[in-house]
Amino acid sequence: MGGIEQNESQWNSYDWPAAGDEWSGRWGGPGHQWWGSVFPRVREFLPAGTILEIAPGHGRWTRYLLEFCDRLIGVDLAASCVEACRERFRAHPQASFHKNDGLSLEMVPDGEVDFAFSFDSLVHAERDVLESYVHELARKLGPQGVGFIHHSNVGAYRDAQTGKLPFANAGWRGLTMSAALFEQFCGEAGLCCIGQELVNWKTEAALNDCLSLLTRPGSPFARPNRVLENGGFMDEAARLARLAGLYGSGGFGARADQADEPARAGRG
Image (cartoon, rainbow, N blue to C red; front, side):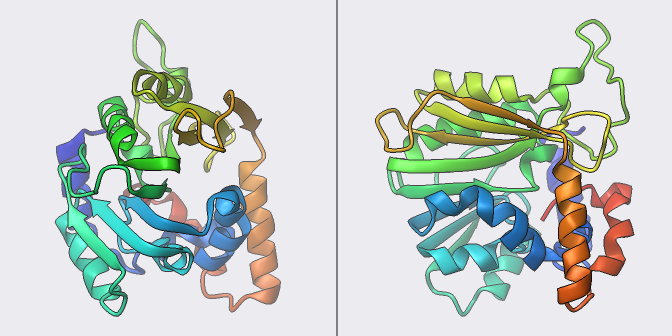
């Protein structure tokens, strides 16, 4: 997996044929993925006054998040993504979009974020990026703020001596990031990691991704970390795709094969 410069180049040059919706084929489309898979995991934290979305891409999830906030701040490393979101959501004055350096959130007001969200984007980031963002969130979250961050867990499987993986990293995941590191970063930043779901994203070989929750000590959501190993994550996707085939328009179910293309490793 590449670093910040490679990620910036990748997503600036990618042609975004369906504004990121092409990656939701396995779920039967973005609507089925949001309402059937993503929203049930974050519903306890919505609505929220101010939502921060890190790496929104072309707004695959932004359009849904806008229904649940008074203000949305989107921050992306790729300038082309920032411009695409500004154009797509120009009719939403409560939404603003900013380019950053892939590490910092200086354009976000301190202590004002009620919900921080990043899904199907930071899986491609290495540990330096996640460590920096966690420390940034320690300043940006409000007193009751919560973060939901989707990141790589591939680092948990790397051989300590060779750095090699026992499986192909087909999803272009960050090689140096893991669930354990995310929890460590939270502790070092003075935050609480309160939940981690380890999932087998597009593979049966490993729990290669992690959905992590964080908050401030003393918030209503603060608690000891709970870890769930979910090896049936892709079964959930297949179930939603079957339902989409029956109840949906069928516009994306037929595109499920595209989700495996190397250049489309899963970034929305």
